[in-house]
Amino acid sequence: MHRPLFAFSCIVGSLFIVGPGILESAPAQSLETNGSPPVTIEQVIEFARAHYPAIKSAQAQQRAAQGAIGVAKTDYLPRTDLLWQTNRATANNIYGLLLPQGVIPNISGPVISSDVTRSAWSSGGGALLSWQPFDFGVRSAKVVAAREGSIAAEHAAALTTLEVTAAAGSAFLDLAAAQQISTVAQANVRRNETFDQSVHVLVDNLLRPGADASLADAQLALARNELIQAQTQQAVKRSVLAAYIDKRGEQVAIDASQLLAANPTSDFAATEAAVHPYVLEENALSLQQEAQRRMIDRSYVPVFRALGSLSGRGAGTGLTGQFQRGTAGLAPGTFNWAAGVQVTFAAFDYFSIRDQKKVQSAKVDAEQSRYDLARTNVSAAIEQARSTLAGARQIAANTPMELSAAQAGEQQQQARYRSGLATVVDVAAAEGVLVQAEADDLIAHLGIWRAELGVAAAQGDLQPFLQLLQNQAKGR
Image (cartoon, rainbow, N blue to C red; front, side, top):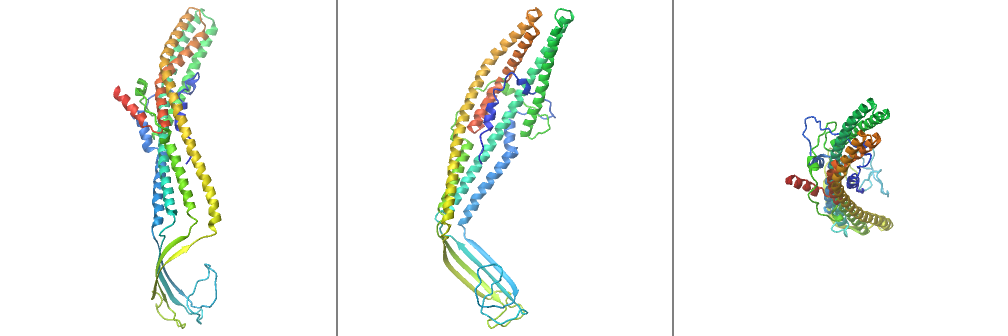
């Protein structure tokens, strides 16, 4: 299983999307529900962890890989083959050789004169016990390969859980940000409605040219379009979140008050890339390939088997060719036992095994390179996530000043317009700056929480992020 680390890169990459066109991709504020209480980000993450199908599938694969260890260990057990056979057949037999085949039945015993119209019962049964006392490490390498595969599946399940829960948390933050952007869009519509009315009063009283009324109407229509776009996108973000908490088609309500109230009080400790599930999975896969190479290395050896046999046969014909009547031959009447050691060696497998070693060595090198790449990618993602967090904190510290200046500028342009010193275009520009400042300030707190989530995902464990939320709740 080889997959790039997109879970936390998506979270980090979506932090600074508050640009000039933010209202074109943001939803509206609406908490209507079907009676369900609002959910918090912790509840969303925990529900996705417990119920999301991708996580359940990964856990099932982990259990299957764990069971493969037991299957590999069964090779150490003795093998016992049981046989029972009953037949009714003629007893014609001749001298001669037949090469091994599965078409002509084998007839044992001396050559006798018979005809195809007479037949008799024959029976046979027995048990063959076979065991390899040693194998030069082949079975051990097979068990190690299965064990490393199980470890890889365990870390793959952890990685899937990380990706799903991080994406669920990101979906929550997307909806929370969308609702804040919708609030800004609604406020912008109200301001433009008020300004449009005042412009029309001035135009109707011939205090301003008619073009001002048209420009004000256009600006109001633009604000309403932005609100419609925001509401549309909010519905999209809500449906994305609903998929993670199994509420498709429902009006999911969220409680983001804790995230909007204050910034995180502290950051969690940094961890090394080596403990990330993705890196651990690749390491286990690399060790699994190594074990499979050892298994091939030890396969060009003699195979020793200890054998034990117990058998019995019955026949309805005698040595002189007479046919016994009734049920003679239905049950074994002659028994044998045997014990011994058998050694086999496939000498010409050398050429095949030699090429298999080359193939497996290339797989080992490829898996080791993937492991090195995983460490590099995770280390880079951690640094990027922490840089994003630092930037988010700086933005949050700057947005209050941005908002205050934008509010003052908008008020001044409104006053200048009423005094005839500014145009509708000047007021519209000030309104645009104010909308952007309001959006930046409203989602600045969410930006820090999103960056904290990105750092936790990049480090491979969301538990520190959840603990940060709990600490924040206790401090309120």
